[in-house]
Amino acid sequence: MQQKRQPELVEGNLPVFVFPTELIFYADDQSKHKQVLTLYNPYEFALKFKVLCTTPNKYVVVDAAGAVKPQCCVDIVIRHRDVRSCHYGVIDKFRLQVSEQSQRKALGRKEVIATLLPSAKEQQKEEEEERIKEHLTESISNRSVSSGPSLLTVFLGVVCIAALMLPTLGDMESLVPLYLHLSVNQKLVAAYILGLITMAILRT
Image 1 (cartoon, helix red, strand yellow):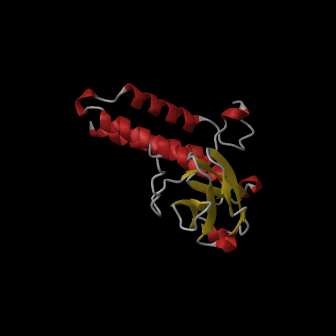
Image 2 (image 1 turned 45 degrees about the vertical axis):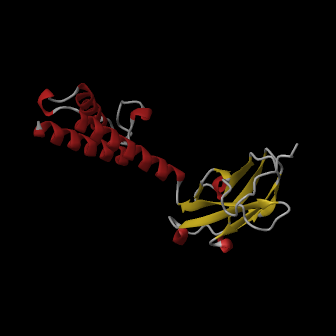
Image 3 (image 1 turned 180 degrees about the vertical axis):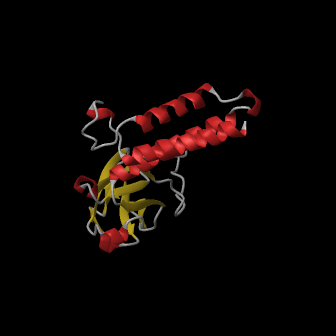
């Protein structure tokens, strides 16, 4: 009987499994200056890996080269060492190259992007506002013109009006509990949404 031979691995064609595929560093949070990439090896053979970067002067890669045993994974720690405002929003790229331990040619590669942002809180606020706008636009576009304002639209309008009537942060004379005091930004978002709802109702 002939022995089964392992298929020839073509250079550059081997899928590389890395998580996450995007690294986000936040300038205002020291704990977020360090991120972890996990490289998985689901194959029956060991892999060598190497981490390359488009801007190596901005990052420290702990164990930038090494090996992963079959059906195991390794964590690669990447630390941002140049946290300055001039780097905010700039997209850098890391490339993970893998090869068989006995060979030099790269069997596969995967790119991971890295971005430095000023603040995690700012990012969350922008994402929340974006989600509200998308949800509102969807609810407006999905309702038929003849049916009049939907219950969701009316409810959102009432919520926005209530939000605008609540006291602003820093207003000490109000009898309303402190946790119901809204920031100026939150009130601006409520006013913006209320404007969209009013326009949508007037068009019907």
